Image: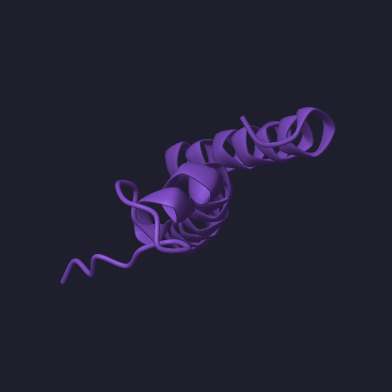
Length: 75
């Protein structure tokens, strides 16, 4: 369901689109955290080194992304 909310009565960009532009990087970091935990969990349950490796790689990705976001700010 798409709601066409206007920000301060302005025409054009909706609040939902504005939120997406500002918070997409934070959402990506959260997604990487969730997927890395799931992959590590699957890796330890099944004993698969592949899933554990993917989980560790995703942890490295979200940590570096979070550091970049903290140092440089929002893109």
